Image (cartoon, rainbow, N blue to C red; front, side, top):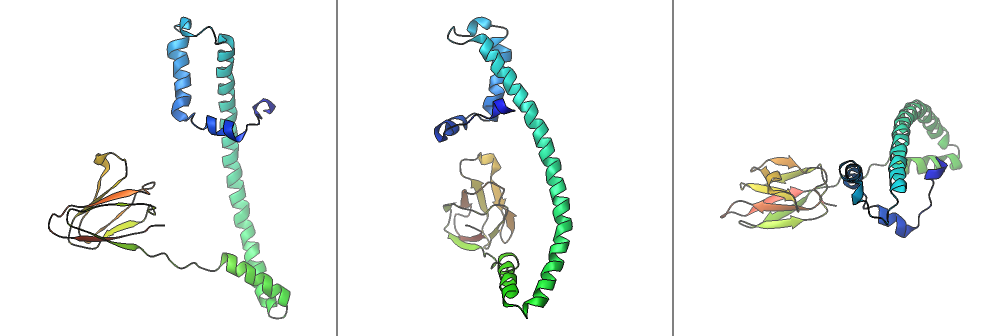
Length: 205
């Protein structure tokens, strides 16, 4: 595991981010489909033995990663169980602290800090209303996903994530609501009516 502890600069780290899951698969495919059956494709500037060793090292690291992820999942379960048990004691402690707070200023201050941080509800965020003209098209950013887009008028609306395939377009019939899919933070809303303006509500950040 020590060999995997390689310090990287910020520039180096940014440089390796582009090696996505797709690129990872590409490395394996190029080796299996090109290098192994056609070793002559390997340029003389590349040490073939070093290349193969790199592949073996990657495979070894992925095996270790799988083991660590499995252990991490088990650890998270143990933490959740123990925290669940401990929170029962914490609730009893807080109940007792509230009773004692009336006669001790310092305890009272401590109780107030905990109360403000963990027991004060934030005001519920309300949806933002929009008007859209006849046959209008609107692009809306910073959309809160997995919330509802509510059609408030008698026109039919559609919406789609910016840059997504048109086949994923979602239709919102008059006076109905449809959830915005996860990840659709930038959407295009279209009013299909050529004669009537539309209106809708949507949660935005």
